[in-house]
Amino acid sequence: MRPHRDLSASHHLVPAGLIWPFALLASCFLWWGLANNLTDPLVKVFKEIFGMSTFQAALIQMAFYGGYFCMALPGAMIARRFNYKTGVLVGLGLYAAGCFLLYPAMLTAQFAVFCFAFYVLACGLGILETNANPYVLALGSPESATRRLNFAQSFNPVGSVAGIIICQVFIMARLPFDDAGKLSMTPSEVPAALATVIAPYMAIAVVLLVVWLLILATRMPLAAEEDDKVPFAGAAGRLLRNPFYLFAVFAQFCYVGLQITVWTYTNFYIPEQIGVSQEVALQYHTAALVLFGLSRWLFTGLMNYFRAATLLALAALSGLLLSLVVVFVGGMAGVIALVALSGCMSLMFPTIFGLGCSVVREDTKLASSGMIMAIIGGAIITPAQGALLDGFGVSLSYLLPLACFAVILGFAWTARRRA
Image 1 (cartoon, helix red, strand yellow):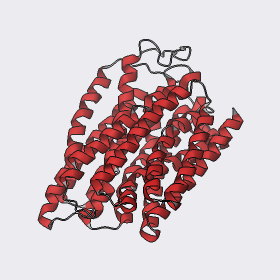
Image 2 (cartoon, rainbow, N blue to C red):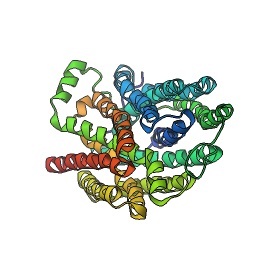
Image 3 (cartoon, rainbow, N blue to C red):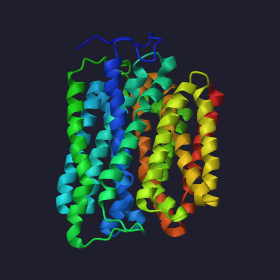
C-alpha cells in the first residue's frame, strides 16, 4: 500500500501535483448532477405514461433518494475498510449498472421495475457522494476545506444544466405532449415513449465506464485515513452526542428535499401561473439551473471575504422571502421568484456539509455518511409536496420549501454563533 500523504499543510486550494486527480473527482460531481436533474422532470412523464396521481409518480423520487439513504452508511464502511478511491469506483460502477437496468425496465413497461433501476442507480450515487465529498475536503488544508468543496461542487450544476437540456431535447421534445401538458398517445405507442426516456441513460452509462477506467488507472492519494482505527461504535456515539452535527444533518435533510421539490414541481407551477407549454416551462427550469451554477461560482469566490455561515444565512433568508412571493403572489412575479430560488440554494449543500463535518474531524468518514443519508429528504419531502399539490394546489404546496428555508436559516445562525 502506498504511504499516506499528508496534505493538510498545503496552503493551495488544490495542492500542486493533484490537479488531475482533483479534476477526475470534480467530474463525479458533474455526473451525479446530471442524474439528479435528468430524473426530476420524469415525474411528469411517468404520471402521464402510467396514468398516475402526482403523489404516485413522485414515488420515483422516493426510490431514487431512498437509494442514497440505504447506501450512505455502506459507502462510509467501504472508505473505512479500503479508501476513498475504492468507494468512488464502487459508486460509479453501481451508477452505470442502474442506467443499464433501465433497458429491462423499458421491456417490461412496469413502473415498479423503473423504480428498482433508479434505486440501484441512486445506490451508486449514495456511495459515490459519501466518498467524493470528504475526499475533496481532505485534499488540502482544513482551513480551505469548505471553500474547496464549494469549488468542486461548482461542477455539479454544470451537470444539472446538461441533465435538464438533455431531458428537454432528447426526452420531452420527442414525446407527444399537447398544449395542456398531457401526453396524447395510444397504448401501442407507450413502448416507443419509454425507449425515448431511457436512451440518454444508455449513453451516460457508456461515459461512466470510461471515467471509471480513468480513475482506476490514476495514482491518487489515500488522504485523511486517520480514522481507520477509530471504533465504529465510539465514532457513532460521539456523532449522536454532537448537537451541532445533528442539526447539520437535519438542515441537509431539509435542503435536499427543498432542492428536489423546487425543481420537480417547476413544470407544474410555471404552466399554471403563466399558461405556457411544458417545453417553455423547461426553458425556465434551464434558466434556474444556469443561475444555480453561476451563483455557486460566485459564492465560492465570496468565501474569500465572508464567512461561509454568514453567506448561508443570507441565502436562506432570501430564499424564505422569495418563497412567500411564489406562494402568495404568483403570476410572472411568482415564476421569477421560483427561478431566483435556485440562486439562493446554490451554496447550501456543500456549505452545510463542510460546516457540519468541521467539528468532527476524527470521525469524518462516518459523519459524511450521515450527511449523505440526509439526502433521504428528497424521498420524503418530494412526495409530501406532491400530496399537498394534489390536495391544495401547486402554489400552496410551496409552503413546504418555505419551511425548509426556515430550518436552514436557523442552522446558519447557529453556525455563525459558534464561529
